[in-house]
Length: 330
Picture 1 (cartoon, helix red, strand yellow):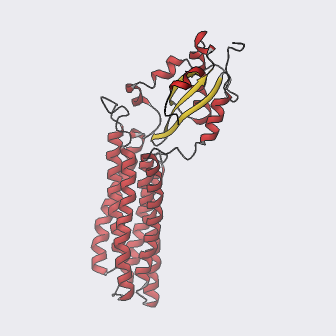
Picture 2 (cartoon, helix red, strand yellow; picture 1 turned 180 degrees about the horizontal axis):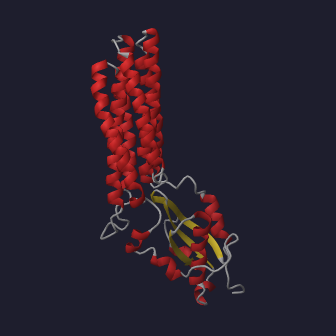
C-alpha cells in the first residue's frame, strides 16, 4: 500500500487507538458517558420547580371553584400535568443513571425518552378535556368573578416564571428536561391569557373571554405536544437524528483512503445527545494483508467523532472479495 496514513475529510493530528475507542463501547463503559441526562446538575432545579408548582396548584384549584373560572381551572389542570411531568422527569433521571448490566446493555437511558413521550400524550389529553369544556362555556357562559381570576393569574405568572427560570438552567438538550420545560412554558402563556381574560371581564362583563383564553391555552398545549411526540417518536422508531445528514456522513467515510464502499449504514439515537452508528465498510484487500486495518478503523472512528460528534460507533471492515458472500445488503 502506497500511503500508510488514511485521512477522512481533513482529519489531522494524533488519533486515538482502536483499543481506546473500543473501551468506551463495552457494556460497562456507558455509565461514564458525558451525553444524556446530567442527574446531579439537573435534579435540584427540577425539585425546586416541582415544589413551587405543587403549592400554587392547590391554591389555584380552590380559587377556581370559588370564582367559577374555567380559565383558572384549566390552568390548574395543566399545572397538574406540569407537576406530573416534572415528577416523571425526576424518576426518568433516576432510571437513566442506573449502570448498564445484563441484558440492559445501554442501561435505562431511554427512560427519559419515554418520559418525554408521556408528557406529550398528557398534554394532548388535558387539552382535549379543556377544549370540550371551553366550547360548552362559549355556548352557555356562566358567571365568572374577574377580580379573583386576575389576582390568581398574576401570582401564577410569577410562579411559572420562577419555575421556568429554574428549568432553563438545567440541561435542556435532554428531551426529558425539555418536556417538563415545555409544560411550564405553555402554562406561563396560559396564565398571561387568563390575566387578559380577567381584565376583560372586569371592564366589560363579557364572560366569554374566559373560555376563549382557555382555547388559547389549548392551542399552545397542542403545539408543545406535537414537538415532544415528534422528537421522542423519532428516537423510539430508531430514526436518524435531525442534525445528522446521512449523505454527508457517507461521503466523509468514503473520502477515507483505502475505503472502496459503504453499506448497511444505520444511525439512531439511544437517548438525548447520544447518537450511535453501525456501518459496513468495504476496504482494499491489502489492508488485511499488511495489518493496516486497525489504523484504518482508528481514522474511521475519529472521522465520526470529529465531524459528527458520534462516540458510539460499530464498524465491520470487509475486503472487497467478501461482497459476494453477504446477503441482504442494505
